[in-house]
Length: 321
Image (cartoon, rainbow, N blue to C red; front, top):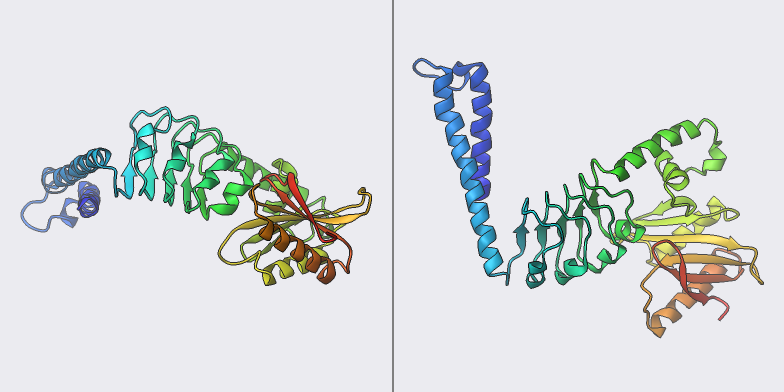
């Protein structure tokens, strides 16, 4: 009902705007004038718009009284300075808007809604997106427009398909990085850039995420650092597609480096994973490390490093074990 009224209100308002410039374009009979345009178009449009607001508020009030089974909730401009505790009762919620409040920090109350698919936090003074928000495993859309964020954790950007951050310090940094990358292209040879885009080059050089050169395979991103070559990275990326690590369904980030300073020089393949992992999965990673050693690096040892979202190692699984 609200959507229909909103469309009617919009159509009437457009007709009002046109009629204010040329009344005869919207009123074909009698003596058209701006007074009639105001009466026939603006007032009905205004009434429809107000009705939509009233119905929306009524719907929200009913949802707050009976949270069970509610899948959509809009808490826009309610003056909240933190994520409201009442959300813990909305176990079935899939879409939540907290737009235009005063929220500075996101707390783990959000995790009480495991089915959440869309989260709108725009127009809040939020400065940081915590990486634990990946606990919302169904989250597909995250709106951060007009917030104060200046970075997005790789784990979050890898998991969430649609992230919007218009009019944020993060967007500004990206724009500046892009300009710097174009300027740097005059100084960097094509061989140095290794075929990566200017945007990726800028992020790598200027945004504090020096994870290496970036290659993409389906929805997977593989970063590599010299002396690993582009050819080796491509061979590894294709293997990871065959093995199912990189696919069309999930965003995954990995990094390959060559550690020549180790007691026995070794290739280290780093993957962002959870800390807790059962032995069966660990053994599967070891087996894949062995296959990678044989298929990609001519039998040279490969260690699988399981890492946090900044590629800091928490578990090492070796092809030699």
